[in-house]
Length: 502
Image (cartoon, rainbow, N blue to C red; front, top):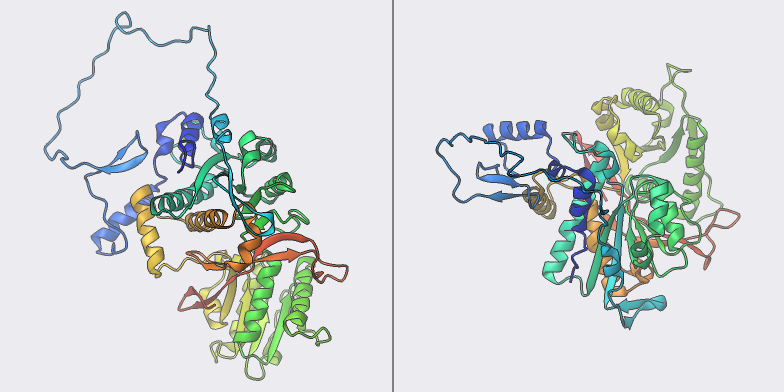
């Protein structure tokens, strides 16, 4: 059973912090509403139900409700009268007492929890579990006078909304198999606030913590749960070196090295290419990525003495007449370009390659890049299409998937806005990890590798990351640094959109 101080306590948090009921209204962009109206006029609103005039916002519940007997006639004009202060004096502070908010946390952490079973690696199955969700809602930056929620808060709001939907579904379907006390906190996006939360009584009592957002704050939380019966699930940070030798740390977002290895593996197994060439701009970051790819190539080839892959450093500014004709002989050539900071470099490289392969329209070439390429704005999409571009991504939401469409419709019906990618992540993370905690107990992370699952935004395929030795190779049986999701979506740009191909 979910207690009163559950995930819905965030609504109380907003009331305290925002000082305005408007803050509880769904984050709806007026421009989006205009577009929806235009879509309905054009008959293009097939995906979502039209907004009816009987659907109104209820400020007490923070939701939209349907009025069965809505008035259709012209409404009368309201006439206001002012009551004299002698009859209704204003409420003022008497300066005789100080308001002290109730300490609801103590009521939660004193809830008795008994061990009802055991699992692998000393895991305990309990009669109830405490779960902490720490996200940067940034309520300290909202003063009630703003007409919209800060863009920087939307990630957490959508993640939380998706998590709420998952928790409600699991509760109603009986999928929790136990009692969960879910508490939500605002990290304010600062290290100081996050450090304070690590010492909070409820956070200290939690068997699982979901969050925070940035790497530094994740590191603080990861160190706080070290050697405790608490697992930290980080849904966003993809950084390495967050917390060494800490098996209580679970990283949902794959690291850059994991992206590179998945890219190389896909190129080797799916492209049937004669040559794989690593391309860089010559920067130190690019060179480190090329080194990682060379090490991964030896591991994937299962040959430590394998000849390294070809590498080229491209400087189009110094060589404006550069061509790639010499690399395009044979059946197919794959270029892996692990560059994500320099959009100009990627644009120039693809432009030159597109020119050299235009007659074949990419039939004998493929290019692999990183997730940031999908957000580049100065690259002609013809270059993506004509050079057969592939990118890696930790999130891919297939709008044609029936399950995705059902979630999208349910989210819109509940929150009156279209879900962002973070909503799918929040939904998937909540369903998967609360299910694992209920199934395997307090040390559920050791059972993650045996429980892969396909979800709305990606697949979960967790593996323990073992500390590397002096030669950079993992030491068999060595200390576990973390558990990391090793699945990466490979997307191909085709027909002017990205589609998953793995």
